[in-house]
Image (cartoon, rainbow, N blue to C red):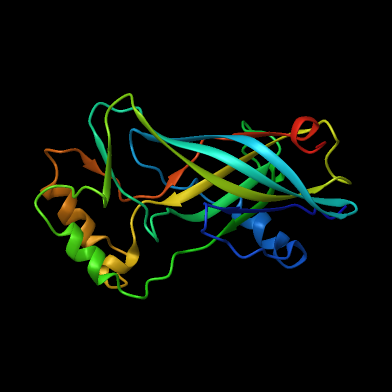
Length: 227
């Protein structure tokens, strides 16, 4: 039986284009077997669903908008420095997965996978000038002390294939956010400017440059998909 599942995540005003599952499902299954997404040592991203709204019925697929409460949590021993959003004050969501079991590692566990990279252009000259200072600038950076967290809100669109999963199924979602903006390095994949700032700001904390993937977020269909 052909699997049909779709999930699209967006953070506040950041919108990811919805992708046709009929065109992407094969790629999703292959991608799901790739290595885990990167994360920053000591920095965890946790979340929960706080609201769901049924927006479309196209049996057997049902589309829900999920409002998420998310938090960056510092589980390490030193402060962690974040850019205060990589695009327009928001963090760029670069990947998301929908799967059956948070413990499962096999390809068959994943219902959908998608990823997107942030645009390099336009070159954020003003932002680079703001960051190119001796200490983390207020307003452009956030410092999370050990044991503390920073809360923000996001949203998700989930298309649930009811011919594949049962009405009382418990599914899981995780999402990845970019901590650094590639345009700050003129398109280079290597965050040279970011590493320069990390060294310069070392006494204030550790500057997060790598993507961060959330802990699994529970999606109880009986609770959230029945409203």
